Length: 301
Length: 289
Ligand code: SF4
Ligand code: SF4
Ligand code: SF4
Ligand code: SF4
Image 1: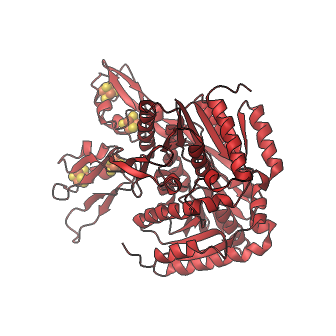
Image 2: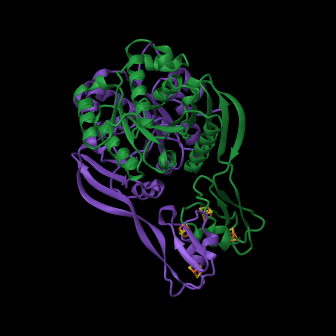
Image 3: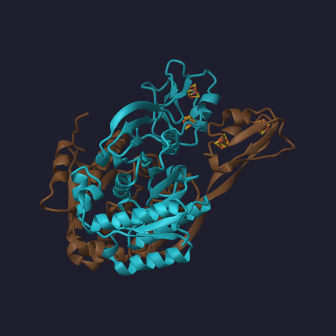
């Protein structure tokens, strides 16, 4: 089984549309949506949810008001500004303290040092993850709760479960829609993968972010294939991206033209290859052929 | 006043809106600072071309253990929630990349064997681009602790009347860290199914933080009113609609500010600012729970 991660560095380059298309083109794939912050793959894959699980990525502090003596130790030890001081109504009584759940990093230091044990330190419910069936294969995906953290842990969970299913079902490919950026969720989506496909666009920011995310892949020793989407917006820059990528020892997986059919496919809840049988579809197929050749090690160029 | 420009989905034009707004307002004589808190992929500098005056390393405090003093009690490993310090057979090992810098281990150590030292996770830079004050954070590649860096960039003191914060995309810790403390949030979206799905998530986040907000629809087309319909259903105001224009995309691709390359776009941002002022001083608008 080969695990292929599709990431973008910069968001909005069409990573999810391409992942959907690859899902349609791959034979018997398992799919994972690791863009848990802003998951969109389900909008075109229309999954039927088979299993729902709670996700707890860590703990969270909560102060029990009747046990709290108002000593302010928690406020002093918390480095994340997560303890809120609420003054008492009269001027004599000590203030109340409460935890701001959004700011709390779950470090537990306040709970450890609170003498009357007024801080409850309990598992937080940070979101849910799902195992679903789609028209192309099994999809593992997730929904992070509102303003919740620990997306890196959720990504790891989604990926591991998808990997396990791919092995059980003997599927040749696991396709992972990764997160944008280069921080914790991206690191969690790409460590140990067989191939990273970086989808970029020919803009100064696309080029800049490609360089950063390619460095990240290199840092973790994962082979990279670069795909330039919307290449005709700036053909000169698209070409420069290809030349620079090859000069840096990255593989080039091809280009895809800018096409309004991408949005039309989203509206129709279809992948671009199902929706478009013209130039766009053709270009995407070519990219997929090259990606599989690279992932299978059949392309040594 | 601090206004944060955010978006659930990346690539909707957040940086374009933030930099163009900074540019047109600076031209009106307002003292503006542009603050790039998208530390994983800071892009504002590609359009504002600032001169950087100061570049400071940003660190998080991580433990350093003095083996002479350590008595091997294991309390440090017990308090750490992130497995960043372990005590095996009375020997302590640290994993600095996992450390959140909470300070718990140093505080709990009965032998005073733990000293905190700074570990670099990136840089915070300040400078100036013409009339705009500029600040940005840049995360070191391979580094996961972006919220710590964002916090430190967000809190760089300023003399500006208006802070425009370019927040990272998404709805989890990095985005929240950048938006916290802002007086107003503009959520940039595009009228596509992916764009609106992610806008819904971002709206939930901003509502949870209880900050006044409005939407900027980028790549608006008159024949596609899906964003207007969405915003009216969700009772959130649209502060600007910026038309879909290939010339904007081309200017952007070359690193040109659309409001400079295409001056006819300036009124959009002046109107946007007028709308923000109206909404920020009025009630944020009631939304159904
Ligand atoms: S440390 Fe405990 S008792 Fe003291 S203020 Fe905090 S919660 Fe209350
Ligand atoms: S658990 Fe840590 S971050 Fe949360 S309130 Fe307590 S000390 Fe602060
Ligand atoms: S500072 Fe906090 S996170 Fe870092 S090692 Fe110590 S206890 Fe763990
Ligand atoms: S708490 Fe201090 S003395 Fe105890 S194991 Fe850790 S470093 Fe050593």
